[in-house]
Length: 189
Image (cartoon, rainbow, N blue to C red; front, side, top):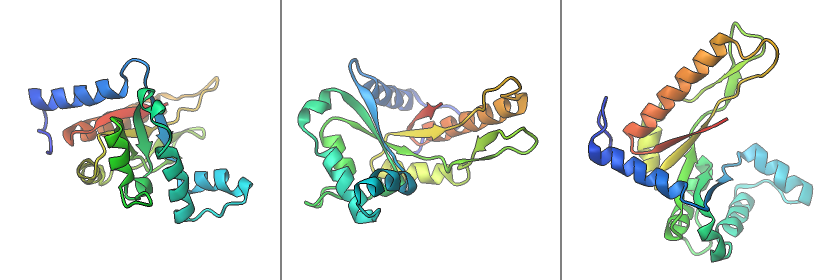
């Protein structure tokens, strides 16, 4: 259900709070399984495995079908877009596999960093365009939290005030859009 703007109802706040509490329950952490196609190539190529969608699916299937003893250690798993729509050999959607283990499904929603004009090599993150529609679809498809990454360059002269303000603004808009769609926003530093 799409959440109310500008204020969330008590029920909507409770839903978001419950999701967040499940992710960070005592003794639990987040498994980042949101490797992009390029990052997966860095894992697969050194071991002589071709970076195909099928091989990425098989890799993820091994990861997501690990022994049930890990269930008590993982509160959430971050998926890459491709992963949310992949299935195990038996036809079970990976999102369902994870949820059936009592683990919350998340999704990477940013579209990567881009140069921030007027700065000394600093960046901002793109992906706000169409984010509300993507979040609404991801929620329907089983995701309950999202990840967004911003990068601040640290040096004697950076981050600049412009980079700080731009990235803070982007993060605030991302978080608001996620919450309006029933998704808990997580920021990756």
